[in-house]
Image 1 (cartoon, rainbow, N blue to C red):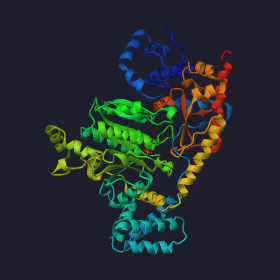
Image 2: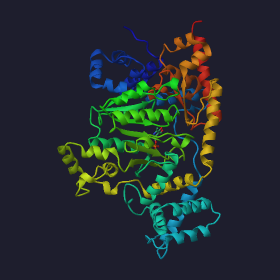
Image 3: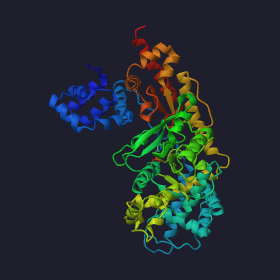
Image 4: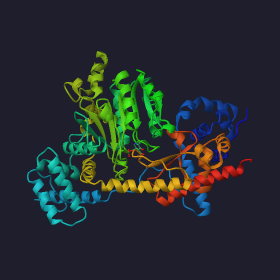
Length: 582
Ligand SMILES: Cc1ncc(COP(=O)(O)O)c(C=O)c1O
């Protein structure tokens, strides 16, 4: 049976022949467009036997599981080509990096760096060379320095931040300042590698405000500072595997739609996990219906993970959803590990976390990347409760397995069996053998402290309101251009918008048109958007969202651009309408 070949596939087939695109990438795009291996092979001029070799050497199943997110680079290329012809500039609404950033903390960071460098020079007679200083008197020295620099950029906030830290951190003043100065100086390896005690106390207070809305559950959370949420997730998966909590063939549940790399991670050969999607319902504004919650009763599901509030829908789970899911887990699967990425928690007025309902089950992941505009800094953290369920699960492993684990961790302790999971996480992040030089750098940790203190001293939430206001204006601009009702709610980040093209089509030209439109491949819509309107959005399908949907990232483009994206989507819809028989 002959297959329809998307024109862009014919184009890239030519590019493959010229050597500009690898065969593997071509096959990947072919899979995404629903082409068979033999039709794809023919397109790039392979003979029958060559196609047979390609079919046997390429992991076709694996390719099918790679997400259409991959298509992004092609879309950018298409938009750039269009712009090269017309002289326009590309409108990239595919990037999740914010274009806003906090400036005040950066200034105070520079001032603290200056203090540390000048302090090191005390007593030195050698040009450009200083020495490590002792703790004693360091807090007073900083006060003197701040007096001298009164009115300098960053001084007012640094003074406020230090005074907050001195009043709230349970530590001697010289010790607090020493740890901050030592961290920013970074002349020693980070010690302890998991996190500095001062960082742990300050960041914990920040998370109490952002994640727990000021009311954390009983018991302390231990923190592990990581290179962003990205590293945090990888460290968690690795450590769960090393500690035999997640084993190949185990099931993990994922609340969808979700940030696409998280769909791909568990099925990698490294983990070999089976995924069960807990599908949010569009009709319920992306909350999880009971029928999906019921899937969590399956005892073969060892872990559940989610992004909350999520990327791509911008929605965070409401109190009812969290309670229903937590109840099911408590009754049917009390040992389930819950991994919750709360990167976007800072952007909502109402946030409900599993960390309150099931603190012992949660591995919380937070990142400073988005809220403070510090993606390049790599600032993230993992939270593990002091009575974490994983510690109990490790003790329950068969003796032979525990002995195997003891061999792994005996390098560090004479009682390896007693090493708690939050310490194992750090050790595993450096394959145990190099654990003593693990951890993120001192300057990163001090930056985390200062960003946390910035939020903690902002009693009236001025910064948060400014950020939310920027995103709200962009959101309104997009939905106004689409002539669609603007989703409302205290649980929306408005960082991304997931646009349901099927619904938009029905609204613009009626259900029959919508049916006709969605009979073709949804990627075509994105190509038209890129080629005809130099606008790049990502396919919602890549996030396990509806297949005729697209994601617009609002954090990286201004209000006018948000409106232009909306208008471009509407224009493509019109083009479809005009090209279809009446
Ligand atoms: C849900 C989610 N988690 C994590 C990340 C990456 O975070 P980080 O910069 O802290 O690695 C992103 C980035 O887009 C994201 O959307």
